[in-house]
Amino acid sequence: MRLCICFLLVALLSGCHTGSYHGPVSDHFDGKKFHYPGEEHEKVTPTYNLVSLLIAVLNHPWPKQVPEIQYSNSPNYPKDAKITFINHSTVLIQTNSVNFLIDPIYSYRASPFQWIGPYRVRDPGVKFIDLPKIDVVLISHNHYDHMDLPTIKYLNEVFHPLFIVPLGNRKFLQYYGIENVIELDWWQHISYKQAKIIFLPAKHDTQRWLNDYNKTLWGSFGIEVENKKIYFAGDSAYANHFKNIRERWGRPDFSFIPIGSYEPRDLLEHCHVDPTQAVKVHLDLESKASMGIHWGTFQLASEGVDTPVMDLDRARKKYNIPESDFFVIQEGVPIYLP
Image (cartoon, rainbow, N blue to C red; front, top):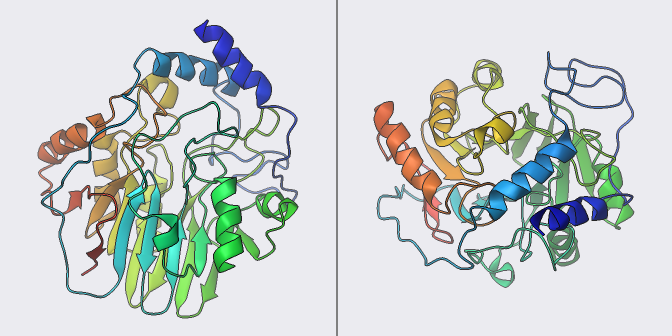
């Protein structure tokens, strides 16, 4: 029965509209598909991995709803740039000149359909109606838990923000009537008001349907605003691009680093860091402070709902990192960057 459900979902994810890119060959684009530099040939079969991962998730189900967790050690710095963890990978950054919303998802399910697929076990920490005016929406890649079309449409209708997306995704958004879109390649940047947004590398993949594996780019973001550097890692496996970002872009004042969706490792190590690797990312970047994201909202892997927080604590102790340097915070409770 479980296999039938898996194959039904896979069958449904075919033949629908998606993004695409046509451009010059580069160290991460072979003319048809994107890849991590030096890894031009696919090492996994995406469809097989999806089915195997779905089976692992079904064998380790989360509860349908989880209690709110209080985190008492979140630092609260003097007021300047303000950040709010909404949940999963959705974060709000408010500055004196620009408000950013990154990888927004307000849908109940991270899925193309609201009747099947991973559902949220925690409500967003900030209701959509309570969002401030959003100037810029950053989208790291096209997976459903990061590029949620219903949320994007609603943001476009209410705020008319600038959407910044990786190569290949402008066509997808414009198909749905969203015109204010800029797409970037790795290391490209734009200026917006008093901010500079740089699209940076990551080691991940993209796919919304069966026929579009890695036909659009993925990545991370660097934001320079009010004399601060804020880094958003998106989704990524552990690799040398983090040290390259530190060398070429500089040391972040604050970083958002994923800590969840990492088990089973044989299926997910090629695209997601685990909490121990997340701490290594923090060290590679020499980030002054980091916050864990991408955990505890949608079950996308087989680890427990709050296991990433416990594993992060063990990893901090292993590397002698104080909790004030790499922490998790409660959804909806703002903190201010130093």
